[in-house]
Image: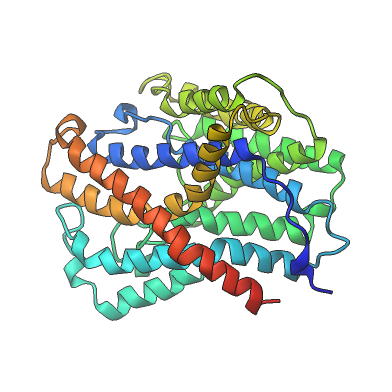
Length: 370
């Protein structure tokens, strides 16, 4: 039996569009970040919550696509299909990061020129596997799991979620899954409220504490998404793409809650967004109907470039961060032409990556790995 011949289910096109909206906001979050003096002054203050939204979307889509197909699937087949979907762009992102690495030397990374080429190449090859590099191989100095492409840390936890789903959690009844999701929600609230930073950021460093952060951020949204897909509930409203996009943007653009004196308030806000608001957005998107052909095309384009944009954009942002660090004190209002150019470049790189690399490589893998 050729398990790869399973028919493809229709996409939730609004959810595809929302994924693209979130990816675009992430790019601007990272472009605004070097201008902030602290978490309190970041312009797109909660942009990092897009990662938690991605986890929720992923769990929902995985449940929709695979939950009723395990009579025709094996664990190895499922993981192979996820490898085909995720890994080509992981490899491309690491390669782009390696190509630009030595050109990003700047005030914030002054020792890049001291990194031997062999060490950079080892980091790249480890990155191809999505396994985190040890701190001893931190060639940039930010203690990242993937110093050549910072955002790849979330893909590491995405793979863990997929493996957990495939080897056991998919077998849970809805009641058992709801208990797991409830426990994960409690852990998320505790972490968000008690975290010394007053937020849920973290997960990109290979330490026991930070891996726990990454697992906490992944467990609730991914498996809550899975539960939502099983329950089949949807919310039908007019102009759902517009309203769900605005709600998502409002969450991510919301200024810091509570300031420096009441950090727990911001943590509580973020927990509420992840546990309640993000599922609401997904339910609105899942219950949506397209209003026009133009809306359909916009959602398709946003969905198509969302993953390529997310996984490749930081290889360009490294250059922008380095440039800002070399022009100490420069504001976003002063540097907007460079920020806009970086953003547009990220869009072009994402689209080129999709058409010239991702789609051809995935087609080749589907034929090769039958």
